[in-house]
Image: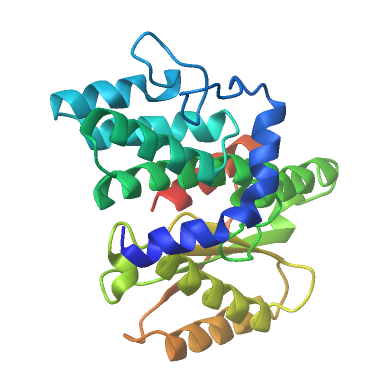
Length: 267
């Protein structure tokens, strides 16, 4: 995770505010901080917030600090804490235990865990992937379920549609760095825009995992030409000029389609 990523997480946090509010409706467990309490809930016997007691112990022992920061970030996101509350709790805990501000690595670990947990839940609720503007995998899954339901009594069923998959090449740009989430997202957003250029009807263009875009479209005599057009557009936009684009036939059942999407997203 780079310094730019930390800055972008903080800058984008207000846009994720509604996701944090959704978390809160699920049962926020924080108590209002009292005198001497840091952000993140009521204090325990150590004088630290309950949400940061494990982190305080890790700071005191000098071991497992980054892991404790990640756990705190995940729990804070699930409880509906804002990124500001999470950072304030980290700073208050570190100052109390070590009499200094938290390190960059500690801040990065906390914010990465907070943002990934928040976005993970957001993906389950939203039809749109918030970083790329593409349809979310959950939305594509629901479209497939609808397709199977509507075509249950139609000859050929889901075979009247296909899933076109575009896979970005590996190892040729900074987006291959494990923590460079935003560069990777922008690359997929660009691929999605080109997909909408080739598929201009009511197709669903969705993000599939870290490196792939999926397009749910109808099978017709022009499908092959659209796929070739998409391949040409993507190869012109990629530094290496090599992009894999192929047509996946849909399985015979809705459950099979779900397993196919999971497999594609892991690739």
